Image 1 (cartoon, one colour):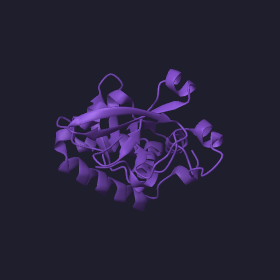
Image 2 (tube, rainbow, N blue to C red; image 1 turned 60 degrees about the vertical axis):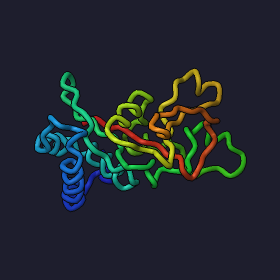
Image 3 (cartoon, helix red, strand yellow; image 1 turned 120 degrees about the vertical axis):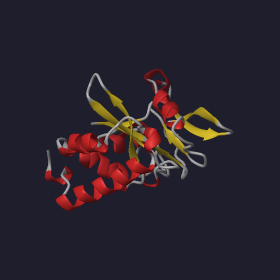
Length: 187
C-alpha cells in the first residue's frame, strides 16, 4: 500500500475520536455492535481506515450501519444529512465525463469512489439507510446503476421527499450542485 494511503498516528487518533463519538450518538444505527470490536478491525486494516478518513474528509460522516456475521465484516455508510458536500457537482462515471463536450465537471462519482476505496450505495442499500433516519431531504445522491440502464446512457439517483424514497434517472453525464454520492465500506 502506498504511503499516500496511510494515516499518521495523529490522523488515526482523530478519526477514531470522530467515529466513536458518532457511533455513541447514533446507537440506533448499530444497537448490538460494540465500538471496541469495530476499532480493532479498523486498526488491523489501515487501507480501510484511509478510506474512512476520505469519507469523513469529503463530508460523508461515515457510521457503522450493520455487521455481516458470515463474513465477519462491519458495514459503514455515509450518514451525512445531505449528500456529502465534497462529492457534489459530478457526473456518474468516466465514460460520461469524457462524453461531455462543454462544461465538464471536475470528476465522476464512480472515479471518486474508486479513488477512495469505497462503493456507491445500491438502491437497496439506500433504502436501508433511509430506515435509519431522513437523508437527502434537500439533495440527491447517485446510486450504483444497473449495466442495462448505463449502457443506454442513463444513471440512477435517489432522494427522500414526502416521507418516501424516490429513485430517478438522468443522463449519466448530467451534474448538479445538489447531487453527489453516498458510499459504503466493509471492514
